[in-house]
Image (cartoon, rainbow, N blue to C red; front, side, top):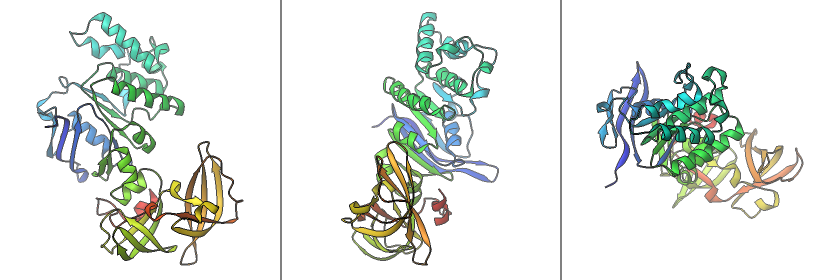
Length: 378
């Protein structure tokens, strides 16, 4: 029988009349790196605080290593929590070294020598050794955030809860810290639960992703499963980029669906039950669309006008305009590896994709109130 580090059962939390969490069910295995991702205001941070025992909740249960969180005092819990509001958690009168060492010094089993060694190691790992004797007020926001991260990681807690700890770091340091966090996790026995709205970061860090929207869980799975096999249109649109086409089912053949869309009749692959004829969408990832002569051999090809091209280093991003059935045009995003020079801006080209790359959804979201307009605006 699997021993869960964290088990959340039917959890609901409200602030007044606002339902922030609704019937959350989640388990996290010991030693797992679980990333909770979702748009701002979806309940990620609230869920993290309920897991930590920092917020009470009306309905449900949270178990930490088999013990009800209500029966564990915050002081005695072997949990590290990196808050999003990190500025208020640092001791303003203590130096960086004193701040980082404080938690360890409260553990009688840790010797003075061990405290010094572990503090030096974590300060070096997080690239803040030069700030050892500074007070928090003398640091930048990014440095303060790394000090708070160091304070929690140095304790080597069984469970580490992290609320978007890399948000205020510059790009290069953020990328380095992603690697360091993965290494710290792999070398420890700790269970990490990490909250972010950064999709790229979530895919890189997580053993498993939990996608949330409006206080509910849309999908859980490995990064591959969530990206390649989204269960709802919200997940397919939020995790990564997708072009959205409104559609109405004309017919089905197994998992192949014929859909009437704004750009005409196309065939797509049903990700969910396709016999529901209400509002539905087809999502196509930009990287799965080919341009020019490469598009000619694909299942679906259509004429388009090249509107813009942006080279970003690893890829080239294109914007093309596709004629719509009502006489207007629809913008499509296309991504190709490397620097592609297909056509001049304003020229007519062809774009195409395979049936397997056009995914049909009749379930927009687990939240019934989500509309196609909401999906398009993500």
